[in-house]
Image 1 (cartoon, rainbow, N blue to C red):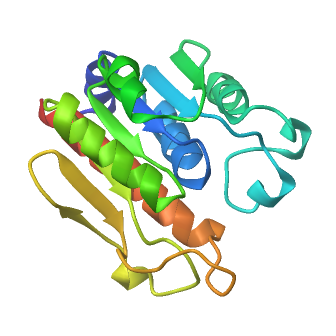
Image 2 (image 1 turned 90 degrees about the horizontal axis):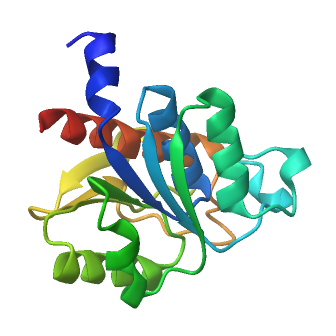
Image 3 (image 1 turned 90 degrees about the vertical axis):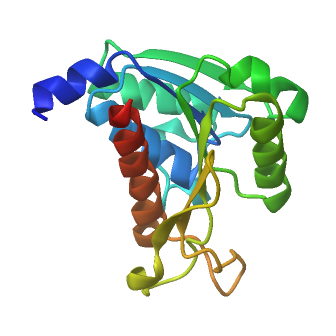
Length: 194
C-alpha cells in the first residue's frame, strides 16, 4: 500500500484518545503525522512542568488545558485536522456519547481505576469499538519486554504489562514513547484492515 493510499484511507477514520498525557499526546501526534484526520480528545488536566519530560507539550504551554495544547500542536503539523476536544474527567456515563463516532479508542490514562472504567464501559456499551490500552511503561531499559497482546475481540494492550509507576519507577520519555508509538502503530494496522 502506498503512502498516498494510506493517507486516503486514514482520512475517513476517527480515533478517540482517552487521556492526553504521555501516551495519549504522543500517540495522537504520531497518528496526525501519518494522515489521520479526525480525532476525539478527552482530558481534564493542565500542562505542568513535570509533564515536559515525556509528554508532547512545550514550556510556553504550561498552565494550558491539555486538550487545547495538544489540539494546537496537532494543528501545527496539519491544519486540516478535525479535532473534537472534551475538557473533562471521563466518567462511565459519558463514554458512549463521546466515543460513539470513533473507529477505535486509545486508552492513555494514568490510574488503574480509570483504565478499568473505560474497559468496562467500552465492552458494555460500545461493542463494535476496538480499545488499545497502554499498560506497563515505567522505568528504564528492558525494551525487549514491551509487547502488544490481544486480550479479546475488542481489547488490545501495549506495554510490558507489569511495571507500575511509582517513585522508584517513574514514567520517562523513552519507554512511554515506545508504548505510545506501539499504540499508534497498532491503531494504524487495525484501521487499514477495514
